[in-house]
Length: 178
Image (cartoon, rainbow, N blue to C red; front, side, top):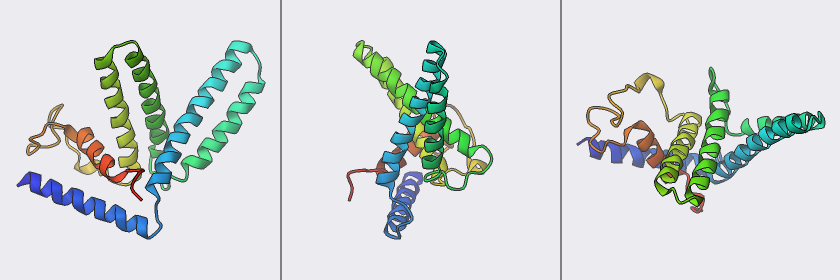
């Protein structure tokens, strides 16, 4: 019964997203590309900071500010009406997701496949949480922790909140769907 409700809810969710796309309220393919660009801008900010510190050349701080301004402008295209700390949370979710992807890629190259896959999974979960927050899929009032692997007492799959949110994001953010 719960599984049928979940499928119905996922189908309704996808229909809602499709309707929003048709009304030109959102272009998830472009927004997904934009989110990856924002991740890279955050990384560029970090590199300018460390380069300034390592070289003692203050011009890198000026470049950092230019990139930061661009990142802020672009983030506004996705994080439209942040409440509380959602703006900063969003930025840090993207930054952490990208860093975990980078570390996972390095672990993978070293042949540490299990560690890499664990890091990739964590990166995707954070990325999914970013989209969950910014597509208003998360109502914190309704989220209750049962245990580490279950969303609620009816969760028989044991994927938890992040796993379910990741599944929804996979279905919605399909950049190849026209």
